[in-house]
Length: 106
Figure (cartoon, helix red, strand yellow):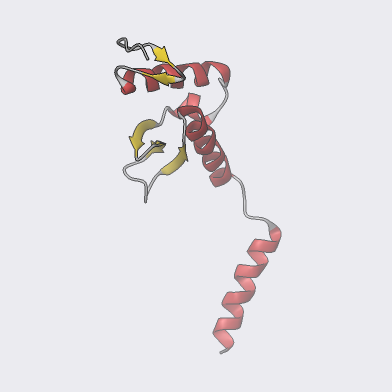
């Protein structure tokens, strides 16, 4: 396997992974210009063979997408971002309401 600074070899990007991730994020955002990733530009981190797309101060407090590739992490981020914008389903709202009402009578 030939190693060169910043070139792909056998499906892996060799060299600076941060530069490669930024390039892959740019490509994803160009391909999906209306996505939350393109609009909000989450930070990318690589942890234990997984990419993390994060918008916010921490994984616990922010919007997070996790995946084995930059693109998968950005897709997961987009899904989480959009899920946070949707209203809960009627069934979910009724279930929470009923459980609170039931707890008050016990």
